Image (cartoon, rainbow, N blue to C red; front, side):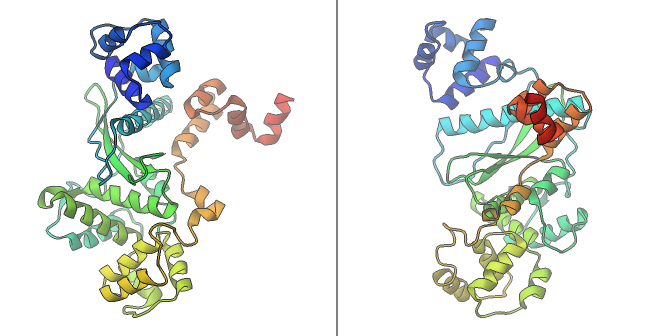
Length: 365
């Protein structure tokens, strides 16, 4: 596996075999690196450390001590993702999940406890059946009918690993599975694009949740995507709640009303308008008119974005991994330097997170 990791990290960096050899300043040849990647030779400890430095990866990543492998990575996008793009994302996910599993192991937590709401995955006959599936998930998870305040936290509580990572611009997100050695259960991971607005990331999380619980056998790829998108709208904007808020049938909306509603459900204005059309509150012609007038340009520039309000934006970040690291640090299960390594933060910043800014600053004076 060390050869696979070297090759992946090299592609992430966009380096050819010869360019990597040059960056290593003659420590090894391009031919030798090729043999490492083909598992025909094993690099020495000195070469491994040099590779970590040049490729900007950790030693534990190259050594692959946990036997981790990504499967089912599907960007599901019309964009042409390059090999470098894919390698960058896969490397980041692997490094992150290795650190995540380390801290869960230290705290003796069950990493594989994914509380799937639906077993087995559901075969839908039509795209619109995703509405009932969304309602069923809400019932199984006892969510009620109100808007979901924090989609990221919800999925983390249910055992999904959520990573916000910088992806190629037109890729909103994807799901994948983490395979581990010793016949351990697979771990589901959802990765969302850091470049996207918070509204878009919430929809992506719900969309990718759908891919975990919808059996795609009855759909072609395009209809599978439509069903997942339909599920996301229904899950985040329950029909009965929306009808109580704005009525069962409408012909027109004002800009301010739409902004207030989309902020209530914490979704994009475009997703809200499509949802209004999907459940018959507005007609298709009213939807088109809205996109041509008060919602014009909302697909590229989100009106009054949630993250413009700093407190709103901070609420929807994945905090579980960070929280577990500070828990282990407070219980003296890991050292300050180990916590900094896991969190990829400076030691003084981690100490401030543990002791509070006043006490930590006093220690450094």
